[in-house]
Amino acid sequence: MMQRFVSTARARLQLILFVLGLTMVAASPVRSQALTDSARVAGWRSDIRYYLDQLKRQHYVYSRQPLPGGLIEAADRLSANVPRFDDERILAEFAHLASFAGDGHTYMLPFGARRVTAHMLPLRFFLFSDGLYVIDAFPGYEKWIGSKVVRFGTTPAAEVVERMRPTLSMDNRFTYLWTVPAFLSFRGYLENFADGIDPDSVALTLIPRGEKERRVVIAPVVAPQLRGIPKLLASRVGGAPAAPLYLSNVGQNFWFRPLSDGVLYVQFNQVMNSPQESLAAFAQRLGDSVRRMNPKAIIVDVRHNNGGNLNLLPPLMDVFRGYESARKDGRIYVLMGRNTFSAAQVFLAQMDRDTHAIFAGEPSSSRPNFVGEERPVQLPWSGAIGSISDRYHETIPGDTREWIEPRIKLTLSSLDYFANRDPLLEKVLGDINGRR
Image (cartoon, rainbow, N blue to C red; front, side, top):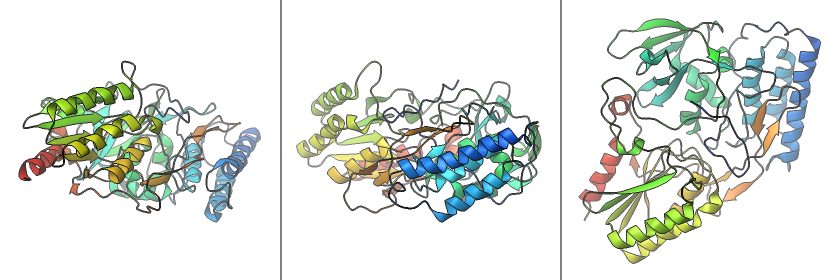
């Protein structure tokens, strides 16, 4: 199902996770039998001190300047609340501490801590233009796929999202679209951001497909070994049509296919070599096909690409620069979205800098220039794991934009997703065919 999380500076293989924490919601119920144990309290407090020290030593910005005052205050509040908070809630609070660094590569994870067994709802959520929906589920819970989420406990789903947003580790204001749905499944976050949560049997108000609003109670399960936020999958509702092109082969790092009327579609899902082919070899094969086909337009889809090794990008960039040089009337469209991050953001910035590419979709989760490189960190007492970013990537010197603005804008709706439609590709093809 989900593989074990691996955190290295070079290989971000499936996910770069950000997490979130502290809010003004009232304290959650206490579950652990050891909550008043002095060794536990001392252990968590030692982890708080250790984490602040590591941020000061390692972070690209805060190794050079004082830690933010708000971070110190939040750490003091967490230290005072350790006896009252259960361990999963404390992990969520640690994620809030990480968010003060102000970048998406400095984070703490809600799972993987040596002393903490993480629990989560057996549901996967996604934020569409028309609300929060269940898009996948563990075995036995598939009947809820396609349901709109109205409330968690007694709190409207939209309000829970808004409570989480200010506490995100993020590069820009759109990161929450990608990260919030993933962390809404974890029990520690539900206790933190929603009211009326029974940690052992979470009440949800859902609108299943074709039904009226109903209240259901679902017990959290032990979280499996996780690699991170999975990529978007094709609709799993009953009777859905075949997967659209952009969801047909998400697990492959890169591939391409000619479309009708002289258009070449390239899907670039990870800035990593694949087991079968290096990215350089793929670029050579793609370049050969571009020269033979001489397409009137190339569509490069990076909606699923959350990063990897940016040092692998040059051969691919040579293909696109060469195409524009050889065919002056040729056009390149780059399809991007909330999942486009890290080394894939460097790719966006290089395309913006070096080509005349037209960007389409929704803003990515990062800036053209950003603090972003993973340096693994593990807290000594709890064993909680995360990352502290220690490098700045300046692809476009002096660029202070918060994101690269798409010229063709579209945020996916639940209706299009569950019907396995790709309105963004349709809009881009319409733009290509409408231009002379």
